[in-house]
Image (cartoon, rainbow, N blue to C red; front, side, top):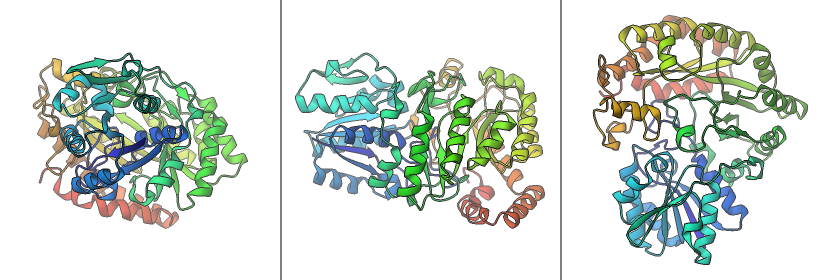
Length: 483
């Protein structure tokens, strides 16, 4: 049986696979990484699989329908997201109309949170594969080939005789080493030059070295809908083997993005990965998401092993806000963290949020003042994006803060991030305006422009990355999100 793994068309360069799906102001476009991991498992089991990323390849609905009709798959797996869900369901319905024998299955954060609602929105859709679906899709494919009882396939919700059946959840994958390298799927199915992360050197690839996050941040969508809070890791040897594979088989790659929610959870493992990278002389730049408890010694070892950049979600400089969102972080430790990154010679990408519980104009001022004083290499200022399946979404619903429950409103008419929250003392428009103004004041400040000029003089390798990101980002500095 042929299987089509599809990141469906929506807006051009719509980054569906990132934690906050949208067309990004920086031009960032994530790989369809979860579809790619499932593709790896399917191919390992011998299936004929085709992975297609419509937003990255510039394919519209007509092109996708023609492609699917020519390929004639028995199973079509559609990636979804909250802002694009109506579009995704429509694409699924059109595929079912021309390929009625195909079994149409939805995957992703949104449908994992709302499987029954999603299936009820379009009767043409056959099933949802919930949460971590690598082996769910493989088992579903085997059941379809063998005409077996679908009630035995763990982790799916499916339509049967006008009823929706929810099978029990599938256990999280414990042995991540058994999954083939996702970079091998990128090499076979995708053009890596289509993908971009503004904070990384270009071109880059994205991988996961672990799944699950032990922390409880109330807004973070992946742990709450896909891979849970039980932390599971690939072995250090397996991770470094993939670095070696990338170095040899994708020689144009200039940086590896480690997309783990928190790479620094297990510092002993981080140390072992770094030591192996050094011992094997991989010499490939990389970056990773970390938390503010990362110590200077580990930072220095990461730098020696090729780490160029660390990424951290500070969210707010106000301790009350951090406590309200269950961040498990101490605001007072942030300055030392920033100081340590500079001592280690690491660049820093920092993310700050607006609109969390307890947010006021004063807490926003405090957050911006901290960002400006600390001067990370790059920053994000963005409103709280409350997605179904998260505590943030439930909090917003319970307190009547959602100004719209139409999921397409989670992005603007251009596909950019939107804000659908009206706080008691801050409107959605005010939250977005704070993000736009903060972004402009930060990046156009004399101090930051001097910093970047000196950086490019001292490190000419940063010139290309800086100007590429600046070119894509420039119009949003001046006009904001809605003008």
